[in-house]
Image (cartoon, rainbow, N blue to C red; front, side, top):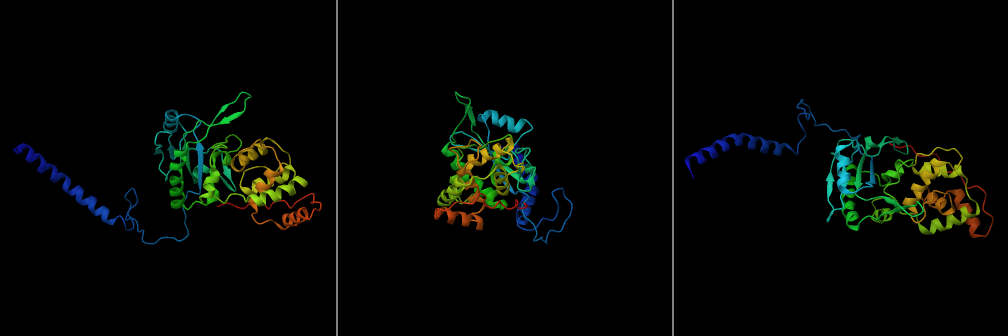
Length: 314
């Protein structure tokens, strides 16, 4: 080793020594409360309030409706973003585009229960998927998600939900919180798999759905009933009493999640039964009486008690 190289190494060690020592000191203090704000203002953080939770209340799932390079360009160079982008590479990779402590611009005009403008209280995940193409009759033909994408997505969801203590019923699709103009992640997203894993709420009990379907076949509810029931579930739908465009869009998104084989947005007895079982896993007294009448072969009352008002959100 030359004298010049030796001198350079000694000089480098001398310069790095204080920095390494400071780093070690900071690492040793990392487990204790901070003594300054991020900007360096002195604080005392030894007292911690009991009344608090994460600012993140929702997890919103999307599909990109485009390919990976285009999605990455849009989500990083335009005025739309997401916290995470799940690619369709082999194997799929998870890209963090926005830190979870910051607001990503992914859900736009959105609402669930009494919560609105969900960008401020949610984490958004975009999954690379073409969405749909138009079929020969103009119908939407949706593209399935790759199994390895879902295998990569599930641990990410579990991690986010655990850290922020997100309620299972607040893991939603973009179409659910923005039904007037969105429908992703679409009818081929495996919501039932997430339910079976305990990530989202339990799937509607099939026997209960079948029994209540017979009640609603005998006594079909009107548009107002559907609007109230969908609002109780969480959708932002106005109680107009008319089967209008907003109601059909909401119903379509509900059907995409819970009855993906048929999502025409039209009311029917099976849809009514699904909504009722989700809202009331244990039948209300009125429904219990109607079920008993149906089982005894008696006429079912023309009206089953309307749902209660939508519960208040946080």
